[in-house]
Image (cartoon, rainbow, N blue to C red; front, side, top):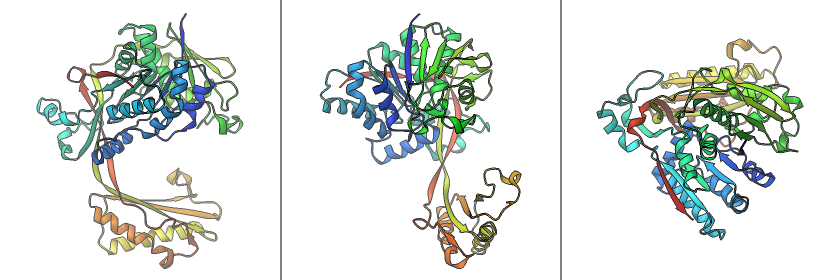
Length: 454
């Protein structure tokens, strides 16, 4: 039975820069997947592209490819990444430049998956009877159309497999499902039928387990976290995928972290939703059918997965402007740290009210005194050595948020004593980018796969 090794070296844009390099160096692996995108990431990239048409993708990816591309060519490791963001063509061109600088011209084929950006088509789609209703509220997109910043369709694994079928060694996508990064290579290697729902569901769940990087190898794991070895050198996940749809999760020997049934189960729960209906463009996976077995130390075998037919829709990730915000903080020290922080918050609110300022929302929390648990934490039972007051506001009017910013710092001298932690001064006013999830018929959107040689 054929087996391929798929390693994932990024769980988000900002994850370890060393993980992808170590996965390639420690080998052997057949595929390296890198997951950079989240909903907020797309809006950040759209802002970058609006300022400069050459941007709009994960620039960290270029540095990673500079370091690993020679080894990938030598070892025939294929790379699949959604680093393209809102500008996969520019990202691919940057990787091609890297290949040329490294003397690899003619040796690297790059597949580009595009077509997910429907920003310029929104009005035509709405006029054509596709309201792009918010999946949570049912409101039509027309309500916030003039504030939309980005709109990207979540493609699945099929266009990734097509790029690999056409000979790509590196596949760069825009917005696609996290699970598709791993399922795509399986479709390419195993030639699973488009309606082989159980195997497609298996590949989807395999992708889901490894998509967050070290979160399934002991990182951010609640179970026995104190005993997990060598966090400093934690291994990133490897999926040994088999042609029959079963697979095992492991990591490189000698690396830190731990692969256990409990840890893999925690990752399975991540963003799962209805466990019987994990919906992707490729299939519907049934998480209740998953069977986990600790087959050996740091190896969890996964089997028994069932799937159902895919829906007729893609999900669309839409971001839009929703006003402005600012968050600032002050630290108060012993004695009476908690009381001082509460008093400072009350003083600030009275001053804002006296100025006639009204906010869409103002939120205060005292970190160190139960901020994570709210009212459930009750009042602090001891005199805290220090307490951090963090206050955030948001408003549609930027000038209102700017005035809040100017009222926070003066508390250092005209409020309760023993304050510190003013940091670099006034907090920064930032634009709020909100998320609008919607559905779109698959019949009106088509992935585009292009191939280029460096």
